[in-house]
Length: 222
View 1 (spheres, rainbow, N blue to C red):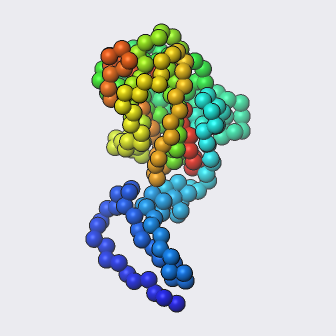
View 2: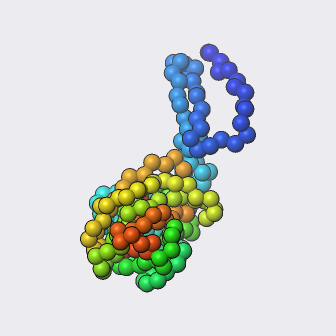
View 3: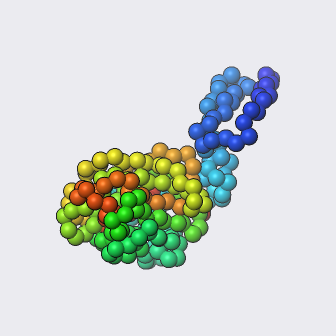
C-alpha cells in the first residue's frame, strides 16, 4: 500500500481558511479540506462540541424553521415562548425605543438605537452553537423611514473577537414597514454569539439602527 509522506509543519496557528491536502492511498485521489471542515468532521460543529446536530434551514420569510423559533419551543418539545433571557441573551449597544428582546418575539415589533455610529444588537446562545448559512431581518413595524442600508452580520465564540459573516453596503431592499430581507451566509465555523452591526448611515442619512425582527438559520449543535 502506498505510504503518505509526512509534511513539515511551518505554522503554529491555522486560520479558518487554511487547508490540508490529503491523498487516498488506494486511489491516489487528493482532497482539499479547510480547517473548519476538518473540525466539522470530527465534532459535527466545526469547534469541538457535541455532534448532536439539528438542521434549521431557511424556507421563507418569517417561517418556523429558524434557530430562535427552535429554541423558543425548547428544541421542538413545547409551545413557543420568546427564548430571550433563557436560551438566548439579547443585548444592544444602546436603546432609544423598544426592547431588543422583541427582535426575536415572532411579531411585528420596533426597536431602535440612539443615533450612534456602529450601533449593534447581539444574540448569545446560552447552550450550543450554530453553523450559520442564512439570516433574516425585518424592518420596524411603524414609521416609513430610517431603514437599514449598511450592516454586518458577525459571529463570535467569546463575545469579544467578531468575525464578519456577511457585509451589506448600501442595500436598498428595505423600503416598507415590517418588510423582510433574507440573505445567505457562507461560513465554516460554528458560533455561540451573533450580532448585527450597522456600519454606515441608514435611509434617512442618520445613525439610528432600526429593526423589527431577526432570525438565524443553519446547523445547530447542542
